[in-house]
Image (tube, rainbow, N blue to C red):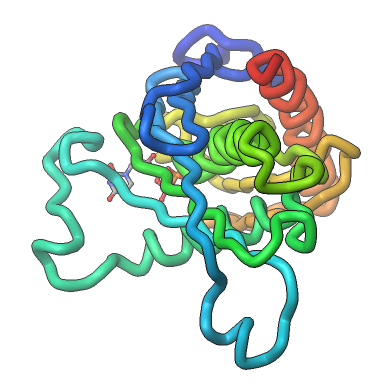
Length: 240
Ligand code: UDP
């Protein structure tokens, strides 16, 4: 059975990067992966968290925030502030984004400043966390270029690129870059994050209604790695 949108099993959704979407941020991009669209913005603040100073940790820090705009989902999703607390899913996702993006930055070269990566989902259709990582890395790279241009750092603190994609078992087959319809039906659903050297940063995966074999696990991870390789080429093209 073909995929509902006609894509090949190993085909990404149409991908675009629109840089400069948030002009007051040091670096920003709107990433579109099919109908999933996320505004990713990087801002720099002088200073580091108190725990770093207290523990004598040198260098800078990078942290991420993630949220879904109220109109990004099919039914309106109330802002967290209206409920008085951030939902657990959002906390989990922003930690994942932070961990992924921390591998991209040489924190010593960044110096005693904090790089904030804000990811706000404009339209959700599956894979918002992976789009946030892929777009967040581009925003971080643009911010690093701006720090060099402003003479704030001797050389760019960007150490490497990272990107992420989802893969899953849908209709008994491993498929790349699931949209919401596929995500809902997926028996097994993974998010893979890799660097431009093809090294894994994180693999999140669960058989939500099912279990998976060693062969399926390997097939999913291999499919995801090939997808990330393409994403990184596209990130690099967006940065020149
Ligand atoms: N979703 C939604 N409302 C929510 C959470 C999720 O509409 O509060 C939809 C949205 O399309 C999202 C998809 O469900 O992209 C899959 O959500 P998941 O938690 O798996 O995260 P994602 O795939 O976006 O990283």
